[in-house]
Length: 251
Ligand code: PGA
Image 1: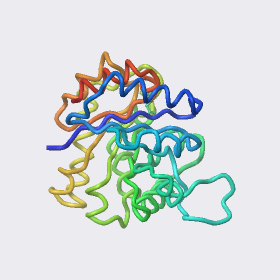
Image 2: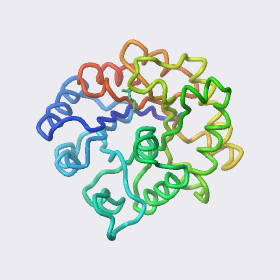
Image 3: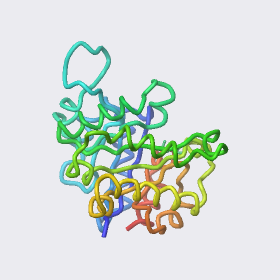
């Protein structure tokens, strides 16, 4: 049995005060950890305070990105070592907005995954196709490439700790959600690719989240799919009642 994960990706939103208010709202709305792992991914500047604030709580903290070197002359970047140092446990890697606006390639994603593992962080690796790629029938080729290059040289032990988020680019922030059939198809494909490369036992242990316009009204159905082990939630994670409702649906 894989414990479901509900992760909130706050993106470039919320001040420190607002972020504290949001997690307090989540804890007020959902007081018992239950059988679900809850994670929030605030902006870098909120990480230290939020980790401190959430110590002893059931909410884990993720960074939204990291650089692949551990230190050095890389103005404006944060390393896995620094993220671990402030006490965050997880890091999102290869989100489609990073790929789209910050030119992140699969090779960079691979380096970042290695940096995350090297520093004791659990990466949430994002994969997903654009609308154009889906319309051209390239979904499996795109996902296959993102996994093949992204996971290059990772060990079986590392991959068994990995979290993957399937986020079709066309469903992110658009209000359009992939259908349950589309979601389950890709999740099954991801698990199958993992089993070929890393073995059945590893592939069965990896938690695969769906992301892209997840909200209370569609989360239950998506979370009930056999290969969906949780959700990476953007917009709806910024409202405590909506996020709580999604958590309850998973627990
Ligand atoms: P969304 O974002 O839920 O607002 O579509 C999801 C994500 O980008 O992780």
